Image (cartoon, rainbow, N blue to C red; front, side):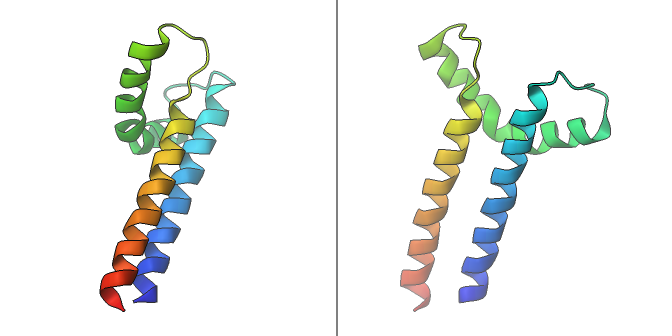
Length: 91
């Protein structure tokens, strides 16, 4: 039981870390052909793109991209919800 919850917590922490790394790397205008940058894009874009698209409707052309922050908040909320449900059903 706790192994499943620990794995979910670990996966959420890793994905949050990847989003933070991508946000920091984006500040320095990285080479888009760098394998690390491409891997980060492939891993994080499925979550960030829909949030960015939705945020664009409300914020327009703001120079700051808040999608990583929103994604981290949503991932943490979803993770807490999933862990609570698993804890209820597995105990």
